[in-house]
Image 1 (cartoon, rainbow, N blue to C red):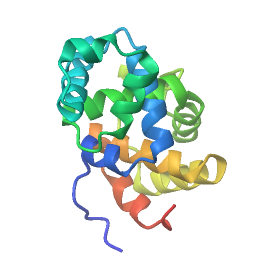
Image 2: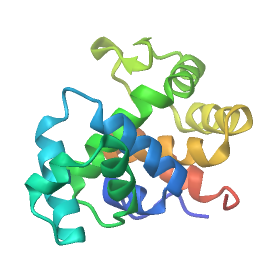
Image 3: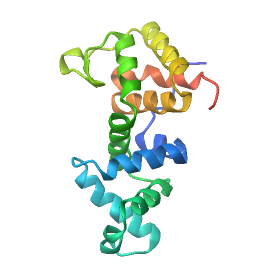
Image 4: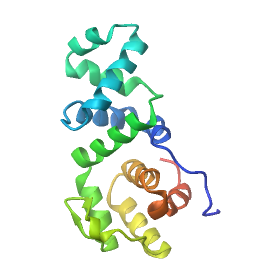
Length: 169
């Protein structure tokens, strides 16, 4: 299989996530204090979906907003991107840390140190991705690696080809 593949987008990853993954992402998103602009966008998307006024959506309990947001398959790139970041930082940190440790990339609890920005060699990337797939649920690994590729295709774009070679989960 060719390493040349179509670029992956955050909204595409969101659509491919399981209901459980989207629910966990939406739950983390609603509790994230740094996601207020995207939360406004999410309220508007839910309001459109339900034919509600945004004020009515804001009055819903977080659990209901979480459920409704997770059920929306088509979201904007900015909203999907923010939910993916919060999802990984809030619920998948051990996975992030294990991957970066395997690559020898300096990080602080899964956040890549600015001084550590470099593109890993393709063989090292493949080795680390495969080790991660063996150590964590493959569906979670797939979402994480594709998210990295969507956020920084120059550094992580090679992950798309690696993940596409894996059996479907």
